Image (tube, rainbow, N blue to C red; front, side):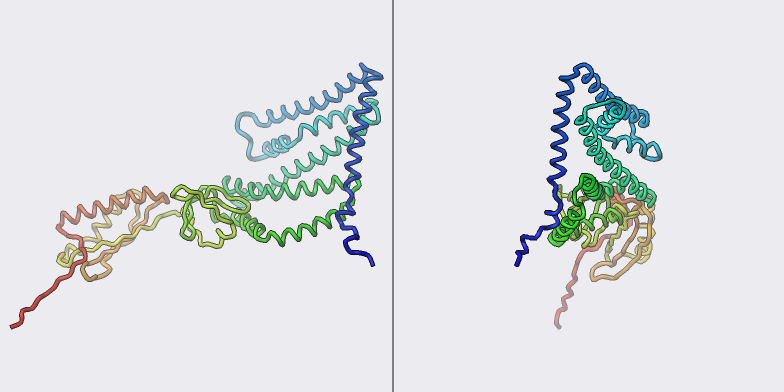
Length: 379
C-alpha cells in the first residue's frame, strides 16, 4: 500500500528547474560566444556589438523625446488622449527598448548562435515584463475613467487607485508570470491548481484581513469619507489621515493617531462633518418671573434681529417653551451656513453677548436657581 505523502503534489508536477536551467545555459552560451567572436574577428565583433547597443539607445532616446513632446510643459496631462499616450510611453521599460533594439539589428546581420539565442531569450523575458507594465497601466486608466464618469472627484479617485493598485498589481503580475512559465514549458495547470489550494487555505486563515480589504473597497467606492474629512465615530473624532488596505488612520483633535481596522470602522455610526452644509445651533435662556409680559413678548423678536445680523446665520425659531421652577425659558434654533466650527462659535458668541447687552438695557434679568421660603407665625 503506497503512502499518501509519496504521491506528487501539483507544485511538484510543475517542475521549475527546467526553465531556470535554460536561462543559465543560454546566459553561459551567450557570454562564451561573445568572447570567441571578439577573439576571432575583433573589429567586426566590436562594431556589431556597438550597433546592437546603439539601436537600443536610439529607442530609449526616442521614448524620452516622446515624453517631452507629449508633456508640453511642467504640468502632467491628466485627461484625454495626451494623458493616455503619456502613461503608455511612461510605462515603456528602457530595458525592453534596449533589448528590442538589439533584436532588430539581429534580424539584418549574422551573429553567433549563442548571441542570437541570448538576445531572443532576453526579448522574451523583457517582453513579458513590458506586457505586464502596459496591462497594469491600461487597467488602472480604465478604472480611473470609470470612477471619474461615475462622478468621483480627484481626491476619492486617488484614494481608490491607491487601494485598487495593489490588487491590480497582484493579478497582472501573477498572470504574467504564469504566461511566461507556460511559454517556457512549465506545467502551468498543475501550478495553478497548487496555488489555488494554497490560496484557499490562506483565505481561511486570513478572513479578518480579507474582511478589512473588502471594507477598504467599500470605503473607496461608497465614499462615506475621504482623506481630509473630519469624522466622529463612537467616542472618537478626528481628521482622516490615511485609508489603507487593512486599517485607516485618524488624526485625533488631541494630536495622537488613531489606527482602526476598516471593518470595525464601518461597523460604527460615522458622523462626517465634512459633508455638513449647515450647522444647527440651539440654545436656551431663562429669565426671572418678575419680567413684565410685554418684555417677555419682545424677547423672541430681539433674538431674531441678533441672529439675522450675523452674515452666515439663518434664523429658524425662538419661542417661550416652558415655565420652569425658577425661570421662564426661551429656546432658540438657528443655522450657521458652513461646516467650520470656530467661525460658528464666533457667531454664536456675538449673538449671546448682544442678547446680554440688550436684556440689560431693558432691565431683564437672567434667572438662576432660587427658592423662596415662606414662614408663618402661629397665633
